[in-house]
Image 1 (tube, one colour):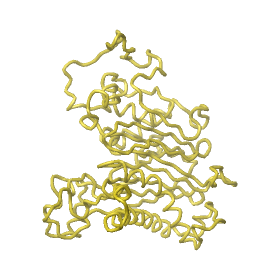
Image 2: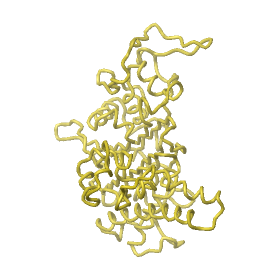
Image 3: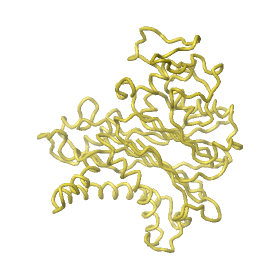
Image 4: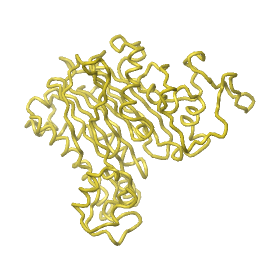
Amino acid sequence: MSSFSASDRDENGRDLPNGLSWAIWGIVDGHAGPYTASIVKELLTGYVVDELFLRAGINPRSRHRDTRTIFQNCSLQDTVQAITDAFLRLDNDILKLATQAITGSQSLRDSMHNLAPADSGSSALLAMWDTASGYLHVANVGNSRAVLGRCNAQGTWEAQPLSIDQTGCNEDEVARLQSEHPNEPEMMKDGRLLGLVVTRAFGDLRRFFGRPLLPFLLSPPYLTAEPQITTTKIDPKDNDFLILASDGFWELVSNDQAVQLVGRWLAKHDPATPPKSRVGTNTAQIDEDDEDHDDARRPGRRERIRNGDIVLSPSECAVKNREYTRMEPCDEKNWIVVDDNAATHLARNAMGGADEDLFCALAGTSVIYPMTRLRDDISIQVIFFGYGEPPSASVHDDDDDDDVDESSSDSIYL
């Protein structure tokens, strides 16, 4: 599980003159190992930029290339096609590397290293904003999700989904697969494609033969990394915000709940003059022993462990015999605003908010119980358009294995 961001900066990481011309943010969510997600996180942005240069008639390897110009000679259609081609080319290169590992004359160590990114798999959600035209392009492969928060004429926040989950629950995806692979009923079982929740992904050699080997497969490959892309006009004066998050977050929170939560956060925070600690790209880890906030504002505050025993505060109100299989973590009556970082605010309220018993259980579940039995890992980015300074490029959460408990968050101000 990882998130990433980039903007038009030179090779030394300095902001280029004349202001920000474009920016990229994204979420990658690996499965069956961290290897594919690691490769996608590292290379996808570069592949997209290279494809845009090619369509602008510029050699991507030229020493004189100027990343500020990548959109100037590209039509809207060219931009969308460039992003699509970048996704497909990266996926093809991952599979090509695996083919060479199997058929080539490399050492066993090198072969296993090159095979790993194709053996595991990854979803990818990428958002790219061209500041000159105002177009925000969101490309999705898998089941991470992008949601735009926009204020309507009545002054209330509305949720506008900018991506579609590509899973076995998506009827359009199922229809596409049945059309491309007719008379193969075993391909989809219990809402899963060859055992996978997602119907599009990077890597995943099982796209050819299943896992384990399935003799009834007739027309592989079944998975594709072709993204579905939406394009939305953004005017920074409207103060829209964009939420990018992995499926672990959206399993707990609806689109509307997420937007309303950020709206509540905005009611108490002014992103136009954020505290110094919040300028640019902020990262935060959910820590069940965090002491940053006043107990009076956070009922049920858990105290420190003393002599090996957990000592609860007098206001602790843990529910005995709680049915954790029937939890509703994002319950509006428990919503609180105590975090300076909007993405951390979303993560906290997704996992219980003011219900400290539930929050501590979900946020720290890997310590005492396998995380995947209670929740999936969570990564969130919140981008505010019309506020503050351009974000610095950042990458965090290097381990992309689904079996690792991670809760990461960014808030970015533009």
